[in-house]
Length: 67
Image 1 (spheres, rainbow, N blue to C red):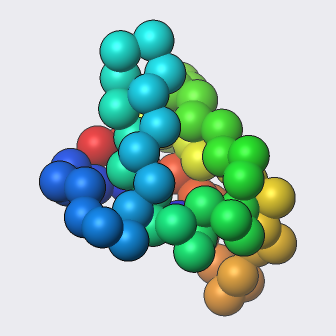
Image 2 (image 1 turned 30 degrees about the vertical axis):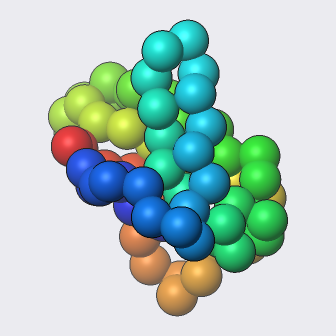
């Protein structure tokens, strides 16, 4: 999973959390919920860490993004 700025479409789920809106494809939302977004700081840098009920795919990637 990753993060990007986007506008909602008909096939998207819009989640409003304390005034911040998140847009997720409905099919992904049904497979991955709940999705947690944390801002983390490590010795390697800072960024967003996404975790969900989906199993890690592809064997690589840490599921984080410095957006």
